[in-house]
Amino acid sequence: MKFFLISDNVDTLMGLRLVGVEGEVVHTRQGFLTTLQDKMKDESIGVILVTTKLVDMCPDIISEIKLKQLKPLITEIPDRHGESKIGETIDRYVSEAIGIKL
Image 1: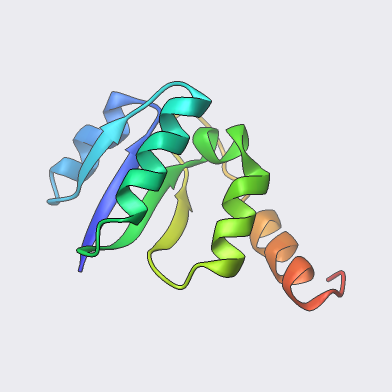
Image 2: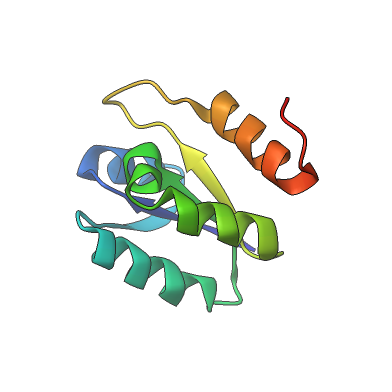
């Protein structure tokens, strides 16, 4: 099982390449969605890492994939440009999944 990074910046990609994670840099919503769909079809990829800025481009699609797809796992990671609100994101996913606001 491999990791794959979809990033909005080269710095994050370079950092993860140092530990053996391949990836791709995209800057548009359509480019992100195309790359995501392509990598979701790759059976060798178990975890897709996505930078926060890209997740913010299409949160509805990412939420739906996370709730319905078993594999690959899509994980949001912060990049060097700012803070991530991953805790809030997790709360929202759990709330949507069980129907109760936390």
